[in-house]
Length: 496
Image 1 (cartoon, rainbow, N blue to C red):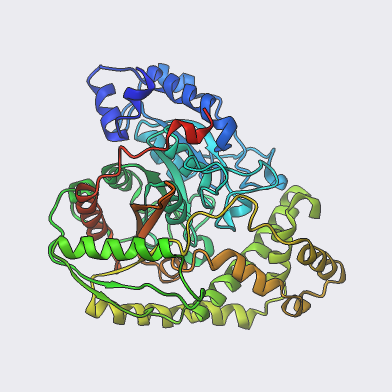
Image 2: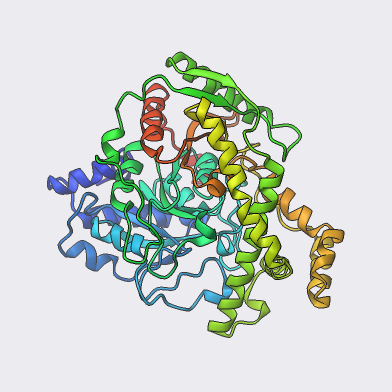
């Protein structure tokens, strides 16, 4: 199979070709590896190769995606015998003892994982520029970020290496890269996809696994593969009676859609971000939906502070556990990670508990919004994908951070502006995605807009609890109205 044939099919279609004997799994793997060899030196999406992909394609494969090449994110999604570094030097050489539950489910579905994708250290940033592996780059513009933390997966899918790849989302890490790279990305609601067997509910349930894809039906079919509890799950999620794949193509009906075009975390949106959501609102109106422009349904600044408080504490716990288990010293972690961990360690138990308990305030406020509306529509990003390196911590703040760490004077971080800088740098260009994580609601980014210079800029839709089916129906309707599958980065953009 030639690459132009390979990239013209989504994963569901490729699996069908394998099933019908028109192509072999080994042939598909050869094409995927060949494409990776061509583009990965430029985009730095794949940071580790898996050792037994050739054995898989020569053996029997079964399942809905049998024979389709696949990539795992290098954050959790463990593959036994291979390190899951999470973008951290401290974990770079430590092999996983068992497959993650999602990895095993992907293997059971017949997928052929052959690599792991680039991610920021512990997935803590909306860009993918870890010290360990170096920056990942956007296939649509190599000077720009593919987003984070699933940036490597997004770049690989956008560049045509694989039709779909493993991703995860703790604050926008599926939707942000989808928006940056012209892909479809759906974050499932809390608990629908298990995180075991090594962890239960990362970030108190805010984080979840998922995928990035070029077609709605690939994501829907993947949701059918991944959804459902396991023995170590903290609870049994409600699973629809039918298949998520069957939602694709169904009439979504007339939806009441509230459109938010401003954020308390940013004074003004970039004109292209505003244009993206306004054009989406107009399209939805054309499709017969009831559209109304609305203010933010929650106190965004309070939510952002509480969101980062839990991130800091989680980071502190993670660094402590890794140091205990591996013997890694401070040099095993990036400076920004050490600062976040120190800020988390300085957070009192009462402050942490209050941040978690206030989640109910945001849930209640959003529930009130969903009494009136079926969908909340926002930009996914407040501006086009930022330039690689533009969000690096400035030298003066790096110096202040090192002084703070040396003096163990973490509380001085507020005075030095470290906390405020982290908020501004990490959230002001992506202010819309964290709410769905904090409240546990499903949300998606749909690739409906490209800037005049050809850079993608997605639009986000958030649904109530158990609203994955509604999102898939709406996404499929939008996909049909404004097809995006055949929009791929020009080869010239990849420097070839």
